[in-house]
Length: 167
Image 1 (cartoon, rainbow, N blue to C red):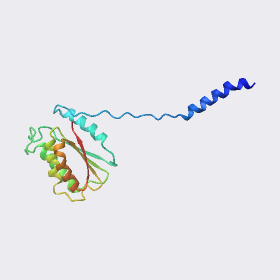
Image 2: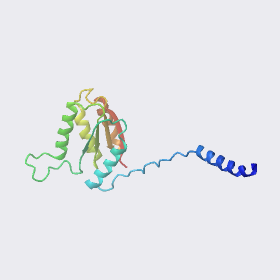
Image 3: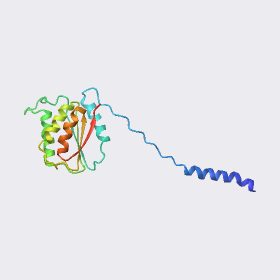
Image 4: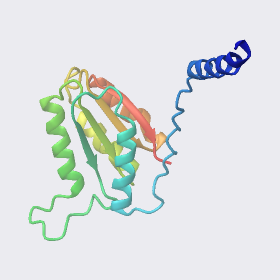
């Protein structure tokens, strides 16, 4: 009878030991993103959306995205007032910054024309109250050459600065 229990005991031990080894699932790192080589608005907007999605750590409320097309300094056809997309975005962002941004929100900026977007950010934040963006974040997706001047303007308004190089 004892010999008959040996295989049963071995089977139970194997089952017991297999339950002790619990493998944790390994999450694959997200594939690196590559900025579009073209200036196609749809490609850039899709790319920027993915970058924004991956950089929302600490955001507890809303994300406000701002985009400038490559020809943002040319008035749109049919516009009676002659304002460019750059002018309109500059007005929008300046008003948002002047009214302050609530903690937990993020302002995200990106464009195929990194320098032009950096100009817009710096101009919009120039006269901002030092606590206008306290507790909020600003994400700038652009060229490393433009990052430091954007960082200085953003941090002067009290926001956390997040930079992602578009490459």
